[in-house]
Image 1 (cartoon, rainbow, N blue to C red):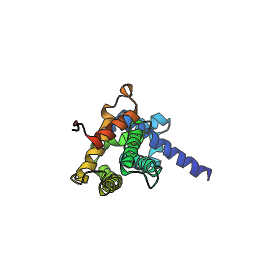
Image 2: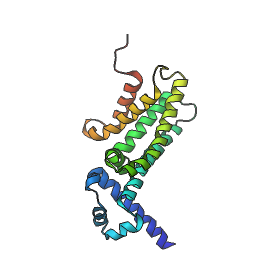
Image 3: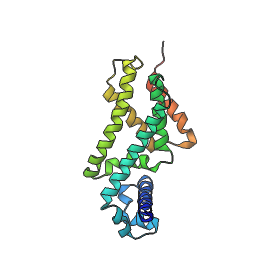
Length: 199
């Protein structure tokens, strides 16, 4: 029992270090040897838990999406079933940005490295991404059905544009220019109100 628990803890540490390396150094500069050295173990110890670098990266990137998905879903559900749909979208935006711009290395690692990952890794991650996209799609559909989003908007395009914009902030966000919550509020207002002056 102790050995099993130790094995699980070691595996988690490997994933944590991998996520940090991917976030800070990128996929090209993240190797099994780097991760092993960071942990103070032999490279063979990494292969005991993951058969290849691709297997390790796949799980790390999948966790990145699963974590932000769970954070967003929790934030929305905490509002209660009677919350306005726009408020659910606002909570989702805030939770997404908190996950990707905060101390969660996994979600940022996914955003920064997905495009550079081998085809097999991307293919596996697409399954997790699709589930998250479907969740956002349901939020937008509910809002549109309740007249909180214009019926003229293509929700598929809207969803991809919104998630893409949120993810891209990992590349340019500067905490010295405002908090994550300030950014989330700005994005929300931009999303629901636009930038045009209303007559």
